[in-house]
Length: 343
Image (cartoon, rainbow, N blue to C red; front, side):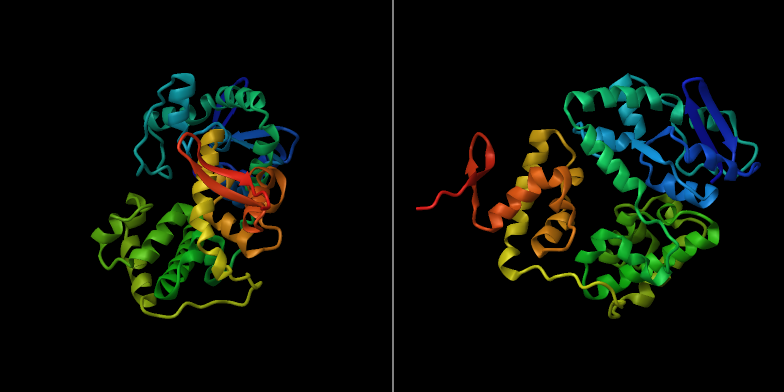
């Protein structure tokens, strides 16, 4: 962590995290105050590392926007669309560790939080109008309470949900890349997702690149992932694992998806996507493919078996696979889930 930006109703403060001890900031985080953040997952990891705690109450404006129909919007996008504000842009490769920081960097850092509370107020009012406060609170609490460490590098791949769909050599590469990412993060005192995003880990595992050019072209890989010798380290990890068998450490047994239910996955995925559009709700907040498979597998405490998600999609899908309901196609309404009447 190099710079901490804090805004309240009185203004914006920038804190040089290289010059002061951030540990006392834990008193603010562990207070009744509501912390408003945007795309908070990586920041939460940094705060826990620097302060030893995380906010007691969290609201994430990216999640708020997802419950209003946006799809993982950037803060700049939300400020422009909701508040008609254009914030200054920063070089994605800017070095926040160099001192002194330039005026343009300070302006960008301040703008990153200056309008966050105003944006939250606007989004929250619309969420209240739609009766989705409990939905947003549950999603923010899920984010806040995610497990963040400490972790064994060799077991870190288990935290990346999308990896579960990989098999054979691709899974072995994913395990190796995730372990490399974890070790690199520890060496440089960074968060693993800053070193390489989850999307990039999966992309690298699927493509198994052999050159820097191939690596650069993959989804989720950006400039900071391939500079300063990182590309060569990453490619070496890929090469060492390519063609090998994956290592599956002992863990809780996950039920296999019954073969007769496999055709149901794309069908219910299409229906969930349609439900999301109808509700103006980001699909991944309602149900991911992994959520659907967990439900069909009968995984204990699957996300779609409780809360608001169970009511909207979990229970209807259960009724569908139990033969109590059917899916039909209507040209005007699309896929329609209807009760099955005997006879």
